Length: 217
Image (cartoon, rainbow, N blue to C red):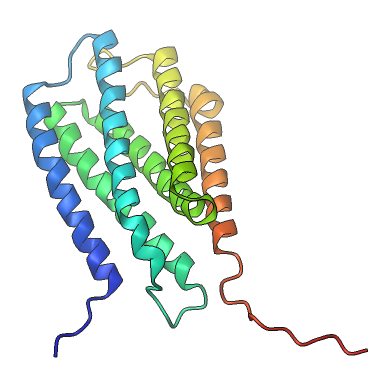
């Protein structure tokens, strides 16, 4: 008699297959089309790369979302929320590995590789959380819209920052704390707040009793 595969194992298998499907061809492409030296071209290249990374992560969370139809952790108080958090972690790990491999292949300056990793992780987890919450509350179409808008807003904040401060002479991350506080962090904080709020609203009612005693007269 064969044992039933745990949904988390299935989700992990889907994630690993998706990683291989993305990391191999994208790494090859970026080894061929290395990051340009010209600041203007590097600006476009870097943002296009970040956008592709987020599309890959977005497609993964869309693929994993149906796994939440059945409870993963039956003994927990909030099985749906625990399962959703697991998917967010898988998507974030996927984004990290894909970003590290392709950023190295692109030949970014180490500091720019770090910025790309931070940006990718920050957007990926928020997008995954928002998509799963919106998917449960309003369905796939509105979840797609919400996730795509969040991706555009977050990448837009990175674009505004890079446009304002530029790169170092070696093509690295030009760190400007004031601009980060003015441009990037507000967008990140709003994205995180919206994503967590939608996810928690979607999970409300878990663990609550379905029947209540009638008030005594």
